Length: 595
Image 1 (tube, rainbow, N blue to C red):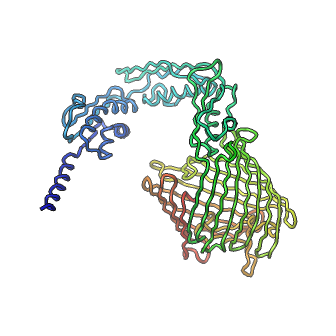
Image 2: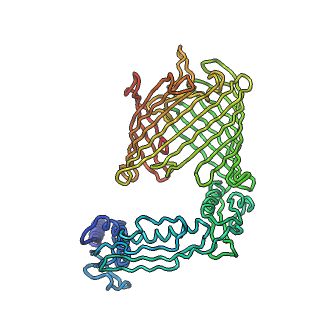
Image 3: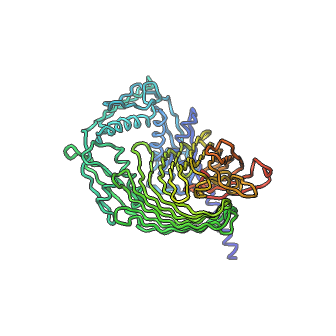
């Protein structure tokens, strides 16, 4: 009997849920797709329905709020003479008592008659800073969207701020609708405010990081004419150190003499961090890694990171590789836009074509160029070790001076859909003992282009270039030479499978390398995407990779699952050149796009 009673209670609960379901409809007459989309996004009632809300009182409150929400949506699309009716179970929502309890709401009908679409009859913002260009949509005869007015006023204020007037603001506006002419007349008055300089920077919130170092890293020059880009740069400088979870500069709302008071509020990160990782690949086997990091080693936001890795366990890429390294970085050394770095590395590489052990130490400067997004690194290093390859066993020692230039204009470094990235390293080296002198050059360029509905299709291009100039390949470290094949170069081809054939089954890395990768990425849903790709690699014994080279290529399909912090990547590829073209399959799994 108890079981039957429970079944009846469950059935009654289901029926009650169905009976209390709400039906929210939007009718726009005459209909316009863009306007319908805007009003749908603006409506609180439709949002409740999409979220599956059931409380009757919530729908009453949302319906009453929708008068203003839908009116705002009409203004956003340039309609200033529309009418709105909202019926809750047939009763106009404005007449409902918001405090009266209702047991249910069955229907909410949103009825909108937009009326005529207005254009700008007058579009004035004044005064303007020299060289100010207002949005093209803010002009006589253009559709009078409300957002365009806000954009024009904000643009005028930003231009005044850019030339040293941080207190610029709109102080008056006149907006009138001429219904017979279906025109909107707009006049916005801007007060530029005084020209000011940066005042003293007050720093608050820091405990472990010294105040003088925070001021050095921020690099805001007291007494210099106000520049909003310097504010943005200062905040970015502080966040980039990793010592702060947030860094915000609060501008004063009134001048002090001819300066603007500034307050820098920081929140410090936990100084120490420990991490570990484990990965498995059918190609490279098991990889174990770990690190320890201190974000504020000496009290000046100095970062020290010690990390180790063991890879190639049970893999097919040679033997087991080991590495242990330490990296030290001191921000704002000499000036706010330069960081000092020093690193050291002990490494063993047991690769298919060579076995190498070496020690490396390097120090240098990282400089970020203002307003360009470009970074230049230069330093001096020493490397020594031993190598065993097709040319026998040898030791080497050399000094090298790397110079690296990088520009990164991608919209998202982890999953780019537009922009470009390029880096070039030129590293002259001088041999000590039996090592030749020469120059090693390595470059990497990437470009991204999206198109189609909601930009769901992205074409991604990558080109890689490498060359060793002026040195015999038998007298330089084996890892200075180039191989092709595997996830980082040509998918579908075995790891480091393309090299210089010396005969008798012996191989050596190439003196030069060129690689190209092309991907077509298609978003199927907001989280799932598919990818088609084609990779090609060239290896040459000459300094020019396009001279007397060996070539291989691979192609395949991939699947992407967006986790919010980067996609999980699954690629399946096969060779497209050679006797095994289409006969063998390689699988690659990782986090983030291939490039």
